[in-house]
Structure formats: structure tokens, C-alpha cells
Image 1 (cartoon, rainbow, N blue to C red):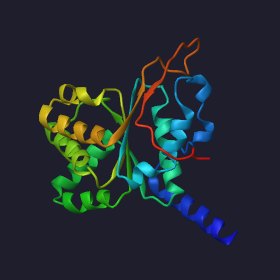
Image 2 (tube, rainbow, N blue to C red):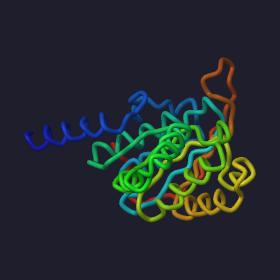
Image 3 (spheres, rainbow, N blue to C red):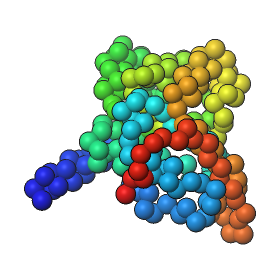
Image 4 (cartoon, one colour):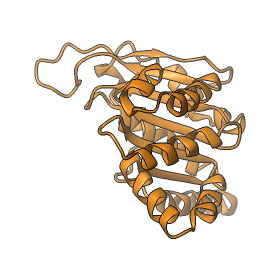
Length: 214
């Protein structure tokens, strides 16, 4: 009982440090509204073995298709596995990278990112950044290869990032590394929360062995 309470307290502490905009768990995720999303595969990923292997998850889809909820659930589960997690948006991350770059504090800031077990980046593709911002963002994503696991939510498939962000070489290099050691989950339907919806969310995962997380 004492060990369980200590683990629970440690998990809650990690949740607070992770800066989730809203705490969402897999228990509140509506799989019934997205019948093509394989719940057993999602629960396998929730065990966190992908983090131990330094693998990534890229969730692609339109706004409102459950990307942020699912990513938050991955992060929440990781917190209770005593993983160091940070949730941020692409625009916030870029702003902080530029600020630290201008103050010549970029290296220690990037070291703090390297210290994480899981970095969750939302809203990739919602807008373009400056040339410097794009370069710094994709350098962080590229540098995390085999060092930190990433969960990325984006409206644009990774193989189109070069066109969307205006820096073909850097964007493609980052995308290649993310997907090389990762799992692609595509939400291809309309936002499932719209009235009268007829949505299909089609996941594409590299399925891991192990029992579903419960």
C-alpha cells in the first residue's frame, strides 16, 4: 500500500510538471466513435515500451479528430511510469527556442529538452514560422533521434513537411528520423465530434508485443 501511494504521488508530480493543457486519459477516449481505431494497439503503446526503445508516435489528422486527447493519454500514462514528460505546442516551442537563441542560452535549454523521456508537440502545421524558427524546431526534432521519444500531432503528413514548412532538407531529415523509429497514426475522417458525423479514423501502427495497458 505504501509503495502504491508513493508511486501515485510520483505520478501526480510528473503530471504537474508535464504542463498538460487539460489532463485527459485513455479511459475518457471514445473508441466507439472511432471504430477503425484499434483499442488493443493503443493500449499496447500505453505500456510505454516505445519510450524505452526511444521510438516516436506521429498522429496526423484534421482538427477535432482526437489527436490531442490521444497524445495527452500517452503522456499521462508515461507520467505514472515515472517518465519525464513535457507537453507543448509547436508555436510555444519555437518561441522559446528563438528566445533562448537570442539570449545565447540555447545550449542549456536544449540540454533540458534532452533530459526528457517524452516530448509531446501539438499543432505542427497550423502555421509557418520564420526561417530561424523552422530551423531550430526541426533541429530539436532531428537531435532527439534515439535519445528522446516524441509524440507529434500534425495536420500534415511528415512526407509533406518540406513543402509545408519551406525548408525541404531540414524538415525532411527530421520527418525521416521520426518515422524511421516510430508509429504513424492517421485520423483521416471528419472531426468526430461534429453533429451528423460519418468519420473514419484509420491508424497505421507498427504493432508492439505485450498485453494491453489497463
